[in-house]
Image (cartoon, rainbow, N blue to C red; front, side, top):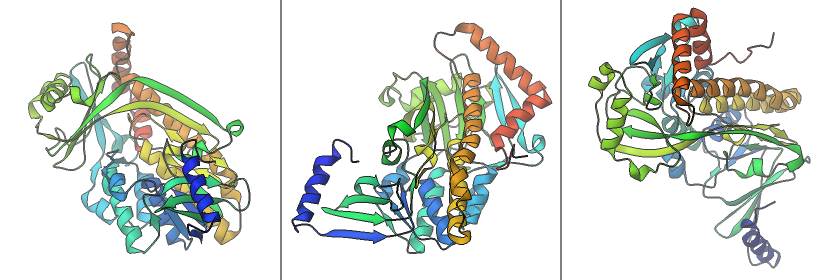
Length: 421
């Protein structure tokens, strides 16, 4: 059903159409994908490769989608999936392979050698904006349908054999009839909001701080990421390329971006780094600055009849540990495989197991992101003893091979079949 604000406008349009004043449009496809972020675009590309027709509907403009600054650390599962979709060429050319990262606490840095600890696994730093651009370009080159600036997007009859998606554009009501609906429309999207209230359960933890992020055209302070636990709060030194850096500071939820000048940001970042990084830090004007709240959120289940949730529509993780985009890619892997099996092998096994398989992996990543967030941040009201507990655990992690391997295994991403045997 449309929400309370959309209903009057949509009802007016429907009334005009019934009176013959406004043309109607009906289109048929196999899979209607709601949302043209990385999840929706990647799903569309994989389905196209398998000969399955899909239409993507997005309420924002393409430029707006590309303007969203998000994560940039890709697990091997995500890298392999982009290769499978045929959009990995630029990623391999421009992406930065990282075999480890640094944990900074008590003023000193300690490297976690992911490559050595996990039998040769790495991660790749490649910005989500660039990944999204690659998927957009591939879809456009293939002449596939993506509808941007779609108003009043609604999902209907997904509990039947004939689901459909409606949207309004240029004063006209459009209907997409389909076999399945893929809800890739994010945390605030219409798909999860349309699920039956008595058939959905939501789990949420909201953290009492945010991340103030700055993007700058400056060389990174270090060739790998630095996660800093400081008495002043958490900091992260990340990057998008050899000439573009991404830095974060833990800040109170009450802070506003306008309160933070570039000079104040760089000064506070220096205060949370070790002497070597402090000396090597190259500063410059910010080209993007924002504060993101942190939350852990999971929806159960992720399937409602013939509608499936994927990515942020079904789960949110704190950015500590860089799991958000990678989890979304795993959802897409499971969902695309399920659709391909349905159309090519006439089996619903993958569809029926989709939610369970996704949630098992999601909760593992949620646990790791929650644990890493608890370990690295200052929590209001916990006092100095909490800092001592964190430092003691970090000291154990870096001096225990088992402890180091645990964090390395989770950071590079557990195998898709982990725990299946």
